[in-house]
Length: 117
Image (cartoon, rainbow, N blue to C red; front, top):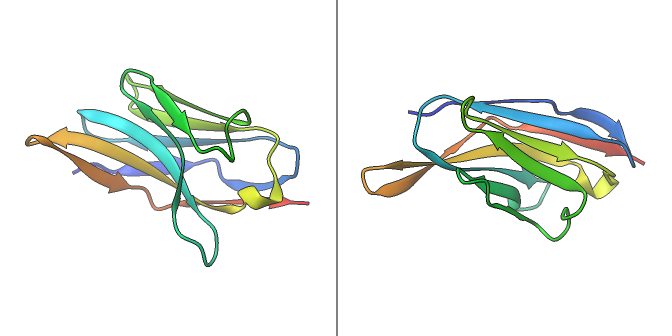
């Protein structure tokens, strides 16, 4: 069982910056990432990063957000710069753990990010 503990959400003004962190217990975590869900919308990918540090971003955040991870600490970070009101959402940490020949998904409890205009 993997547990994910998120931190760093809050209220920020448009154009500002925020940093999210997610610490995971367990091992064999192949991929970690961030997803977000705005009210009334589906949960969408923000950014993901593999254990070999290959990253992928949603078009809407590319160039503004940076994902990174510390494998020794099993922690993933999301540096959010030049934030916009449309970035307002609950941000969820995700971990993909390789076990028994497949990848298992785990989710954090979510952290609210609110961007004021």
